[in-house]
Image (cartoon, rainbow, N blue to C red; front, side):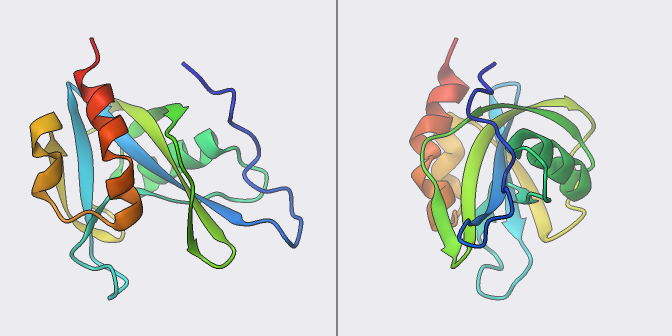
Length: 145
């Protein structure tokens, strides 16, 4: 497990971006995709679920908390995926690979449908742009021995 890039998600500086974490939740060779139900400009598109880090939280702590809140599952963040995206001014998205430890994911907040996708199915849904950019890395993780 590589958590060397995990640090408090924001130290409170005015010029720093607030961090949003998303999780490519992997289980049995498949990854979970979540269809957004809101806000209107992204409703119907697919993403890796997650949310905003709270002050003092590390990225892994934030991701594990958000996956419990949004999906009702216990997960462990594994490694940060390459890239970072400015979602809007002051808000930066970072995506992580995570593994499902316990629970059956349910769309509890902000999503209306979930799908488990194998490597050959990753293009079957309309991803949000930033999530689409990490699909090659996700496919590699799904096919790794």
